[in-house]
Length: 263
Image (cartoon, one colour):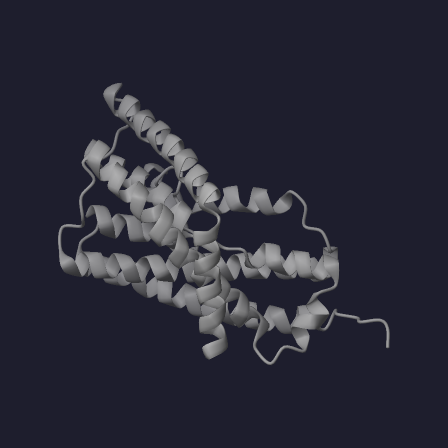
């Protein structure tokens, strides 16, 4: 366990070391955040949106969506692909720790670093500019934190499974970027799923993607109450367990593809 804590700590320190990257990322995300908020303000101003969601809720939703995109930092896919291409995956096999566990610890460290040096500054700026507020109650805040972590686990497992395809194709190429945009679309990061037709909503609500972004955000902005949030959090727990199981099984299959040459 100490090894995983060390990996996590090193990632946090790494985040602190690259100050220019942190500042530039925050500035770019703020620009995207402002553009997204002003888009929804214009849409509501023109009455182009027919929904029971208020403009204030939509602003909070947009801000949180951008903040979670910063917080959901995952490098497991890139790490697997890079180690497979460079042959370093053979070194990973002789380490006295679980490979995927080390990747998860590293990404948790990056997530904590993003929380401290990206999420919080953007949160404070959003509060000053858009009047961003905390959830309506303390239980809602706690459930939001739990739901956010479960959403991260689901997203991380999906990225890990996708990264394991490197054992077959060696180079994932631009498919990885396309996968990220597809996940954000299906998860309601760009446009909330409740703007979709009722039939599509019912299908999406039982898929894992919508529980990455929309479920925690809905809890935060009060779109669903504390009691109502227990059911989607239960679905999150189910999908998190399913994704962990799928990742574990797929990992075993992928590792059988490894062939090490030399003596």
